[in-house]
Image (tube, rainbow, N blue to C red; front, side, top):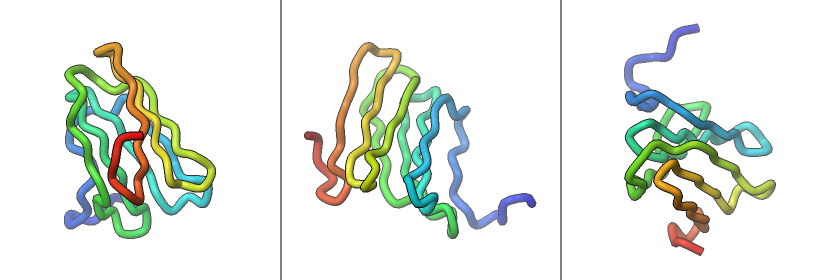
Length: 88
């Protein structure tokens, strides 16, 4: 089934992805270094981070959905506390 036009899925090439354990959220990491967290049911972007200089290679969401680990080809990694929108 094609996505409805009003959904805001990533436009750049997605290199990495991770679903939350309940399947309600999806994190995407793109070639341009952008990371976004989406609500799967609506396609709405819940959060985004554009701080990586190169493409995102890996993503992992914690089992409780509160942490997101990001690994980039720029040789950096970040760990986010999603409810607080803060780096850990």
